[in-house]
Length: 268
Image 1: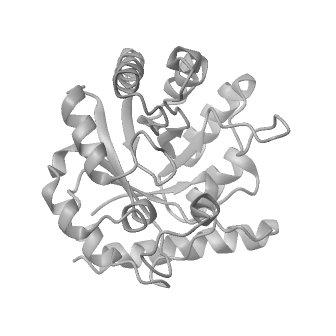
Image 2: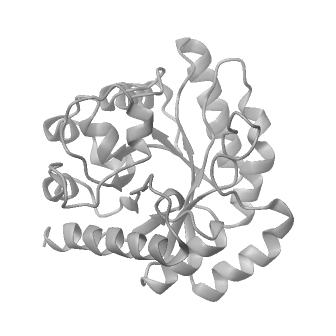
């Protein structure tokens, strides 16, 4: 049986501390959070991020609730940016006991993208971390399952795996048949959510931040999960774009967790 982890963008209320408490309340032992995050137009963090100054108290919180960090975000390969800049956030993730880093490839110059991803993998390996390569419709350097699998094969990095987010799979033209062609051993984690159709929208990034509870859309999640090896970690990533109060945010997260558990139970 796969273990579930709660993603920060499913439960933004209360920041990383609230995420850990919500996961523990739901009986989960994993979370996915940010030690680095993109900045918005005003120069502020787009998502809640772990404060490096509070690392000791946050580690204590994780221990007290018996929760570990499955994925630490966000470490994209970007044009004009050296992944060496991520070292402080990377070492913070390692200090907190994270299992892996998450990257997207926005660099479109192939050789530079591969060089930078290789460098990130080496930095991660030096700190005992895996790297999860996640394709998306808005990361032009790696925007499909086939491109992620091909990039993984070219690099041959021992700590690199690929990730399959249900939204990004089905809204970039991916299919279950394509998933079957990928070596299951190179899939490190998957992310569950649902959607209303398979059509790529004109506002894909906004859609990525407003998803449906598993089972309430049309994605074939039961069959998708059935294709994943038992080693694959699964994130519950179901952001809600509507403003939610503390109790509403927790209720939303618990609904998403319960529905994701149903998708796993159906497999047996």
